[in-house]
Image 1: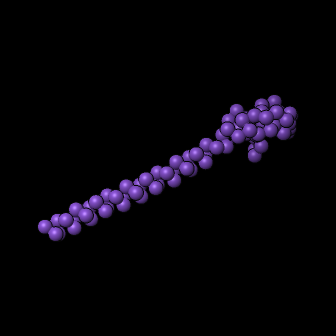
Image 2: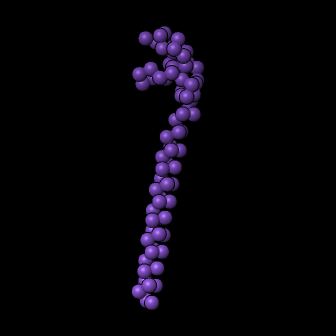
Image 3: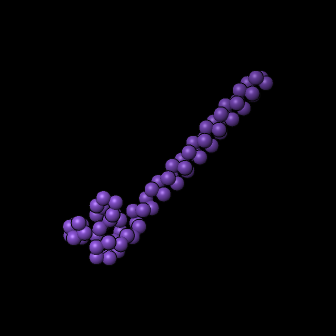
Length: 76
Ligand SMILES: [Zn+2]
């Protein structure tokens, strides 16, 4: 009877530990995703015409964002 209680207690402990670990891991992944999606809404200035555009709508050329392909050809 005592052995059975110990076994149940151990199972509860293992389940609780696994759940706690999983929850911690999930929140960490969620934090990474939030951090990752942050630069998408960032406003950048086009170095050619000076217009502010969202990085989502901007065109990336090398390491610089431009508002349009026209500005890329003007810059090079
Ligand atoms: Zn531009």
